Length: 512
Ligand code: XMP
Image (tube, rainbow, N blue to C red; front, top):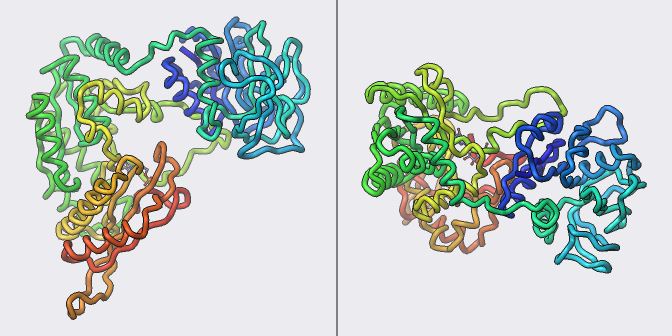
């Protein structure tokens, strides 16, 4: 294990991902819980993340002393380098040479971090984001790379195995960063690199068997990747002690409900209860147009239906959930105040207590891309594992304003054509999420000499790595024109198509 201490950088999670990609398990822990984590995890190395604070201020975060006394390799990145230097007797000063974005480093000495990657004399682009800089090193350290704004862009104390880099090796904008982190965890820390999805699968199955014993487990399937992977993993672990419940909200995309039912029931032979609750959901949403109210109604109805079904099958001891690592990482917050709710995400919150069930969360340690790899290792079809995320409230939040069955139907048809065109153009896997939105606006058009007065359909497609930030996808005009023509010709009720070119922030991915 490699322990990553978080000082609040926006990209700390990327360090964990890069380390795991190098085949080594890693965990992110807030800097002030570092001493406990050292005892609990007994890591082979520690990485100190970047962060927004300045070590020139006394009250800012420091690494626990134990980190430097444990006799294991330490790598400080950006703020992590600076706090290491300051804590071990060097000097950091407020910067007059701020560096943000691309910079070039010159390698000036040999260093195991750069073995097989960079040699003295090499120049290499890296990604920087710092205002302060190290100006003198603690005893035992030497400079191994410099940049225009950072005389100590990379430093090493090979005797103690302490290393620091002012740049961010974890971001893709540092092209050789991956290799540098690989060197740290393998060459310097001597980690074995046996963290793979097939190893995880065996370990996860054993853990589930131990936790559940002879108990009964219920799992809510949503049609998404996470809950599907949970279901298949649990089925391998405990067979018929698992029952899946699929609450069909009537707000899914074209063909989706059938796909889920046939995959689980016919292909995997997993006991599945399919609840056709479409009319119930649409009835409750009748006349509602406020986005948060829609979300709350859908969340509450979902819980009611799920609970009723769980009772029908005689209840269960455990509820399985597809909670992922980004949901459980404790984030370091310097502002202190609670963050505002932009959108309330619906899940089965509250249900475990109400029904006296314990939680089984076998994906708690995984990132989304690792869940996909695990899904493949479990034999889920590639096309299924690679599906775009789909929100729990479904098409309801893609019909701004009042929802009617007719509008949902129009939207479903347009959405299907849009996704067909994206697949046909070979673009599906380049896009994080793509969908149609049916606007509550009617405009005038002309078709075959007739006046039309129909709805506007907006198309959205974004690239993203985690859904937190996103950019709109740059389709060709040719693609947009072709898709718009098909939608207008084939979907009755739509006579105009527009493309959404908003990034997130300031927009969100969904429209509600
Ligand atoms: P926004 O619209 O907030 O969406 O930029 C970010 C990501 O979250 C998905 N999303 C949801 N997922 N339940 C979910 O399971 C929800 O209520 C929900 N709302 C948004 C959205 O599709 C995008 O991937």
